[in-house]
Amino acid sequence: MNELINVDPEEFRQAASRLDTALESFKAVASSFSQESYDRLEGFNSDFIYQLKLVIKHIGQESGPSLFSAIREYQEGIALLADVFESADSSIADEL
Image: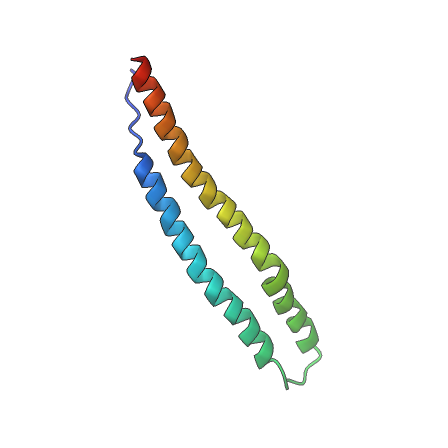
């Protein structure tokens, strides 16, 4: 049995917008968390502090930005998908 596929491109745009807002909020918190955590380790006397500082620095400077970039790419893909659905819908409507 054939069923209609109901897709609302605006829902995709709203989801992409919410993801963008969440990403920006998380980015601000993540960067301050990394720096604050790194700074708080100053004065600790342990064999592991150096390694821990390297991990925090790696997360803040290397892993974090690449993760944000991947999420941004995903968010942009969602927005593009909304445009594709809308365009396809218009094309099909014109043909009918």
